[in-house]
Amino acid sequence: MTETRAIYTLWLREVKRYFRERVRPVSSFIQPALWLIIFGAGFSGLARGSVLPPGISFQVFLFPGIIAQTMLFTSMFMGISVIWDREFGFLKEILVAPVSRGSIFVGKMLGNSTDAIIQGVITFMLGFLIQVPLDLLVFIAALPIMVMMTFGLVCIGLTIASSMTSLESFGVIQSFVTLPIFFTSSALFPLSTAPGWLQAVTYFNPMTYGVDALRAIVLRGAMPSLFPLYIDILVVGAFDLAMILLGTHMFSRRK
Image (cartoon, rainbow, N blue to C red; front, side):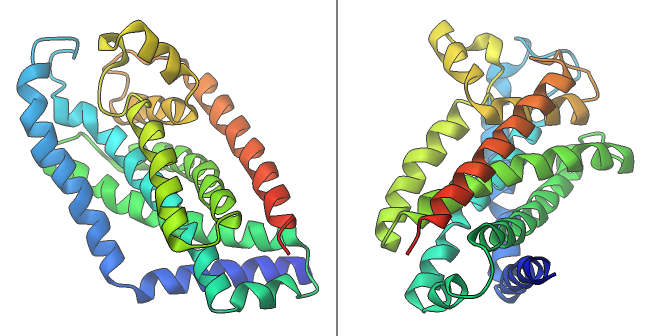
């Protein structure tokens, strides 16, 4: 019961912190909107009549990738909460509490994941602006994929932050990790148009499988998927498990 209460308390703290910073929901709406409207419109002419099926605009193709991008950037940024907690002494207090380090890590992971999922849902609503055929069933089907993606990505941010000593160091390492994950995930381009070496790299990126699953669900099979949906789910699930175990181990080593 003590472990469960600790997890719930840390989850609730992260969620309350998110809603107190009112600028974050606003920024989570503006940034993906700019990607979809400006970047999507700017490159739509290049994609027209190429590998995209008839009736699928580049903006519609890009939409699932921007959802994944929002959750990736948000999830990685959430790791900064560990550094802030260390700076203000809160981390020291919870580390000496009579609960396991694993429960502390899981509580922060669930709280940060909830924040990232909220921003992903806000981005999901942008689909109506570019006439993506969305409905409640599509959202219900896409939500579990979004949750699974967020768990692993948040664990990366927390794992990195647990070994950092300053905000500056975290910012540098975060960009070094986030940008390659994003740009090699097929979020911005059809994989069939990429050179062979980039395709090979993309297959080793777990975010590729999350984006592929989201694209299959949102586009309702209007565009061929890279992998069967069950393969996407298995890879993302294995990635989540590996990152939770690694993150718990790294967090447990903190003194």
